Length: 112
Length: 131
Image (cartoon, rainbow over all chains, first blue to last red; front, side, top):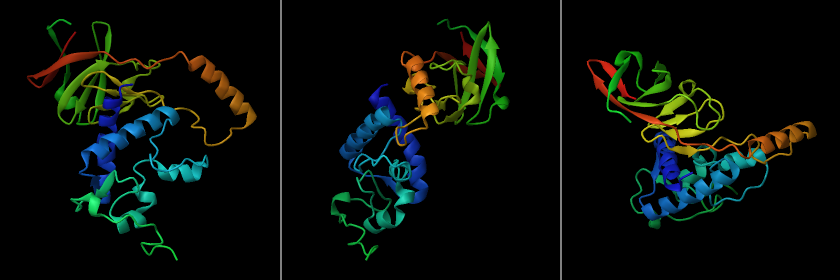
């Protein structure tokens, strides 16, 4: 399969999911291209476009929670840091993703 | 491809996001309405010949109903092969593992080919296709 065509298709499908959740693709287009390419590679290997920045644990229940876009499964954390873990998606109001702090759930006050 | 257009289907018969199969001159063709734009592609999937009109279309992307191979109806390009039966997350029961292994052997030489597209135009409320 052609990687560029698949990236374009993933972008089409993801936009429909993340938009209603209040997110958009990061304005960093180079990062978007890179991460989508990694997802195409992961999809080719596993049949599923997993999050490229998270490890697979070979535990179906946990791995299904890192299928991109994984926003619904980690909503509270992503809302706190205004981005997803790998930075592919950011809140719609974010213009400069480089200024966003990268906080763990504990640092964001979500865990004690 | 000739530029002789043949009347295929009334535009009223396919809602946006819909598809319908037609047969013209022995060719099985799916006419797709992608947001008001009409595309025509071969009816049989480039993977295992499933009828694509039974699948779904989202934008220009048509998903096969059988194994979820995907195609871009504007170009006919295969953009994704079939979804694997087992993504490797869990060890299947022995009987199923043996079955999946046999299926894997049978399927290893089956590739997903791009599908044929046909030029379309709308005239007088009809979608016309060039065969």
